[in-house]
Image: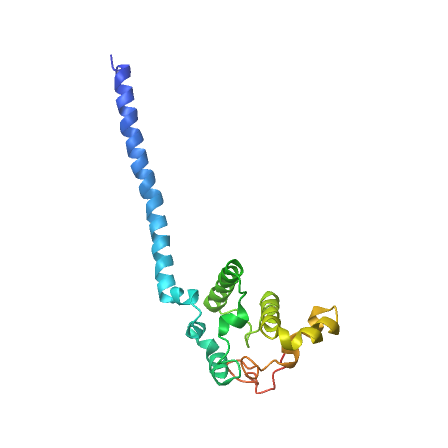
Length: 186
């Protein structure tokens, strides 16, 4: 007597199914929307589109790069190269892989304030820099590099030409640390 005919169960199942889909969409949609909104806000706040360009001004979005930018403007490479010419691979995929890798590390470092001071180049980026030095100056250094050694580290251009791109190595506080003692430069 109290049991509904079988066709009513099918109608109830459709209503429940429709309600479940709407609930599930809301449960998933709200956090996904919040994350997407936060991501877009952060990308806009950090001037994310500027990092897709080759404009050296983008490297100054982080105030810590001001001294490197200023010294580059006064340096010998100012008229011949911009930041990406030295610091990124020249093939499309390699360039954007390096940009995304560097972007992650820069965002993490500046958000958590756990970066080395003064800023130092990482091993992978050092290889990119070396490859770009050799590519641009190939005619001048080909015989020197080819016969010098099989140990690639022994012939890194920045060993002798450390100040070419950015001037002397210095952090925000110059060559001295907070106590006034001379910093040991790499």
